[in-house]
Image 1: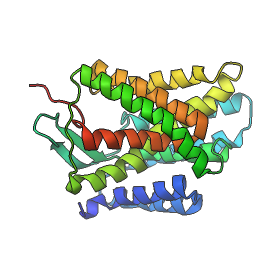
Image 2: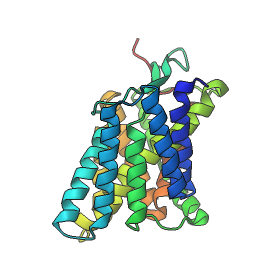
Image 3: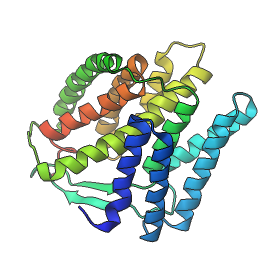
Image 4: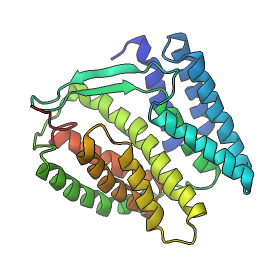
Length: 286
């Protein structure tokens, strides 16, 4: 876990912490740039990958420059399309480092593989930065965020776990796994939850929802973002897509009530409970 090849990944953790939690944007982007330079040196990112993240950065700068009109529409559309392609690992130029290689956390669990992805987090951090520049991320209010988390997280836990259990998707399997927990938790909070909530709640539900669907009730962009969130969770088949949709609705409610950090911590809280108390990521096929 302390191989030099993993250093860019650890720097991504630091960049995410600085940008999203401390809102130290300049320092965060400096650390992010160092991470990609090191990744290029060790071969984790190629010239193609660097060109793509540079294009993402350029599109971000253009998108936040235009307050309205067709230029804003075109730049935001191109920026978001590239972000989704990076998020879903559809583009060349990234040789993501394996952290867990088909690990079975319990005997009957499906094998789990986790990478230090160098494409996905860039999209998330770029979108988070853009949302902040556009005024879609307000000053953090711990009390408001905490209150916004309670109800949706409780509902997600109850509905998703009962549904997953009924579908024989997971079983009750409490575990601590300290050797795995620390790196899994950091990755899930600082990369997975930050990236996915920035894209689906912050950008789709928040920014797009308030501009494209400004005459509609808030729940229309909430449901749309949850549906698209479900579509990208195809690895576990339709059961995982159904569970992702239910969870996405809960994350959307948390976002509506408490902003992006409420959505991030609701997402991470549910994933952490899943990891610690139930089969992770799901029951294997026998």
